[in-house]
Length: 116
Length: 115
Image (cartoon, rainbow over all chains, first blue to last red):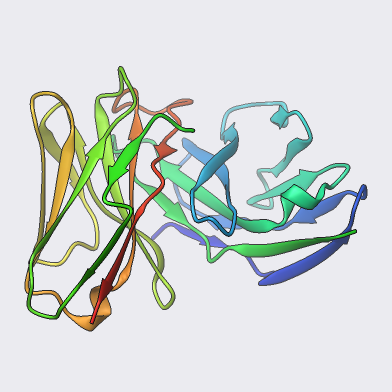
């Protein structure tokens, strides 16, 4: 069965520094997609970044980048130059593409607090 | 703003009651997904519809049902409510059923409290 593991329940980072949020996944499929979402205290889920299993380059979106290591089955999110507004819960998710459904499987989440 | 709307934002009801959660997908999106977020279970996929048809079922209780209407909005019906059904219910939408960069965009959620 597919599984996403986020081993860091909570993390602190100093404002303007970079931070890495860990995500490992387990799947026997060759084709899959990996996502990161941000959930601020207000509750909404905000899409941040996507990485396809066949993408050769790591995905980047502004200050967000995804450190994709396929052999290690890891998809860590790197946030550069942290801002106070980055304080939130972050979820890693996987979509099983061969199953022809779009359902996402989520990790437990990591709470990030940015210190001024 | 993701473009996905959900109503109501908050819902407080009693055990045994029935409620309906409503979702309007982003313009052009054909797939609608429902997820439940609770403290003990985390974020769990409930059900997916594509262009009016059910496509995938997850951990959805028999007391729960959903449908997608011709205008593509969707409703999640929760009946015989129990205390444990208290959770944040999200609707998400995406363009199509296939894989690739078919990103799901989430609505703001409906927070259900069962007393």
